[in-house]
Image 1: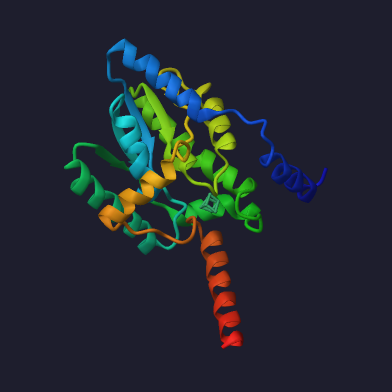
Image 2 (image 1 turned 90 degrees about the vertical axis):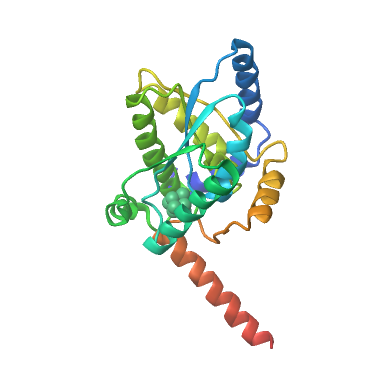
Amino acid sequence: MNDREEYIAYIRGRKSSDKVNYHLQAVKEMTRLRQENRKPSILLHACCVVCACWPMDFLSDVFDVTLIYNNSNIYPSGEYDLRLSELKRYLKERWNDQIRLIVMPYDNVTYNLSLQERKDDPEGWKRCFACYEKRMDECFRYADENGYDYFTTVMTFSRQKDSQILNQIGLRLQEKYTHTRYFCSDFKKADGQKKANAICDAYDLYRQDYCGCIYSYAARQKQKQTEADNGKETV
Ligand code: SF4
C-alpha cells in the first residue's frame, strides 16, 4: 500500500464505529480515584487555552493539576506568545493562579526541520502524528522525572485531532517511563465542546483559526486568499 492508499484507508477507518471509548475510560478511572480518597498529581499538556479550559474543570476535582505549555510547533512566534498569554490570563482570572504552569523552551526552527520530511501531508496525517508524539513525549519525560502520578494532553479535545491515535501514542509512551501513568481521555465528549465554548465566551478568550505549525499556517492563509478571491468574483 502506498502512502496515499494508506491515508485513504485511514480516513475511511475514522468513520468506523469500532472505536475505543476513551472518555468512558477516563470517567471510570476518576471514579476509582475518588474512592481512594486521595488527589493524585497530573501533568496536563496544553496547546492553547481553548482546548485546555474545559479539561482543567473536568480534571480538577479529582487531580492536583499542573499545566505544561510545550508547543514549539507554533508559528510564528507572535502566535506562540499570544496563545501563551491568553492561557496565563485565563489562569489568573478563572483560577487565581492556583493551577501551576510550566513553560518549556520554544524552538520553532528546529521543530519545523523535524517535520519537514512530511511537510506536504494533509492535516491530520503522519506529520501530525509525529507532532503529537514529539510534544507528548517531551512532556511525559518531564512528568516522570518530576514524580507526577499521571500525564495527559488536552489535544483530545480537538475535533481536528484523532483521539484514538493520541491515546494510542500516550499508552505506548507510558511503556518508556517508570513512574508516571498515562491518563486516557476524550475531552470533547459529554458536551465538552459546548462547555468550552461557554467558557471562551465568558472570558472572551482568543480562538485561533489554524492548528499551529508553519504548514497549517500556510494552508490557512491560502484558504483565506481563495475565499477572498471567490468573494470578489461574486460581488
Ligand atoms: S497541523 Fe497541527 S498537529 Fe499537524 S503538524 Fe501542524 S501543528 Fe502539528
